[in-house]
Length: 444
Ligand code: ASP
Picture (tube, rainbow, N blue to C red):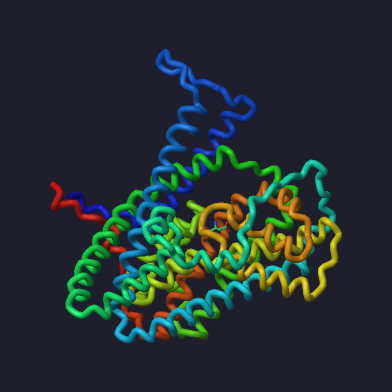
């Protein structure tokens, strides 16, 4: 093997991303106004859009996302069974659950309060005209009571087939608890689950090595289709959401982490790079979950007994970035429609958006659907969503990176307080990175 130094994974992902963006812009320019453009090459007519954008880029990107999603259900189930089963004291589970859910809700409420404050300060909706053709038909947001009932599975196989995360979590926790109480049978099964967990984590690592290509395809496709005209007309709304996302993602998380754990936020952010990039390019906390899990356990040092619970739960119910968009969007829409919201209304927004984030699945664009629920709560017109939909794609990417970072931060806090945290791993800058270089010698 040649001995030249290989670039780290993060650098490779960034290169893939930038290359994708450049190629995307190139195709956008090439196809501007002539979608059906063909290229004559060695005597053949090559339809550019069909071959590249709807062909290679689309297929490559979809395969990448599908292969990440493929790991989510087995990973969550297996590692959570291992995690619950390894808890020395089963009463720890209630404490763990309480702390995790409590922190997720508090950080989300903080995020949305910050968003409302910033939106009131900068008034992004003033002077924006409501287009008369604006039209948005939200799909029905689920009723809150149904959100709670849906947590409990009646058929765990169906939950897995549908990828219903909260139901899988409930089943895995109960299964793990029963295993811990089953003596010898439980111990034998636990050894099998631990082996399975190692194998699945290896699969995650293998896939992460393909990320630079996957990210290239995703970005190339996205940037051929992304319209920037709408961003210009909604620059203020876009800017305020971005500002609060950055503030919350770095400042709030940094301060909370430092105050509650004493850990160095800079080390934390440095180690979060890959997971945040995955979140950014896939726009899906769910699809990013395998990478978040790997980062939290192997790079940040949180033990599996905690991470296997906090990470999937976070990817499902903790959406600080989404709540920020919802906070700014609510104020924006109220301003555009000239509706005065009372302090009570704002409180209602904080409450509903925090609860709505529980029901927001970690997939692209759902935040907007749940926004309909928040708007209805305070009597704002749901059609307002049509105004911001045009700029939502880039915001979705950024807020997903924040959502993922929030999950990892809370995992560190809970891990540290439960003494399920390895400070040596956290402080070791190279922890977890060596495994990214897969050695295929045994396959040769
Ligand atoms: N895409 C976000 C996520 O997966 C959810 C949303 O805000 O739409 O975390």
